Length: 68
Image (tube, rainbow, N blue to C red; front, side):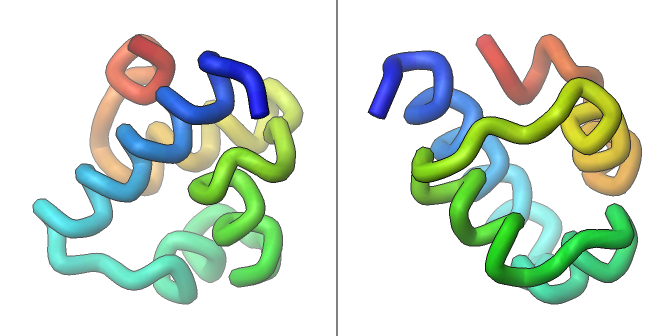
């Protein structure tokens, strides 16, 4: 797992917790599967740029917030 994927997953996890949102709810807002969201959060998969933008929008943050 790369450092970038680890940071992305950790940040998504923290934001989901803060917003009291589940991975399933995020997946529904993004239009992807819960498994894909879980793989991204766990650092197993890297999302396409389009999906990353949708995740940021669904969480109410910027892409920079997710990757830094």
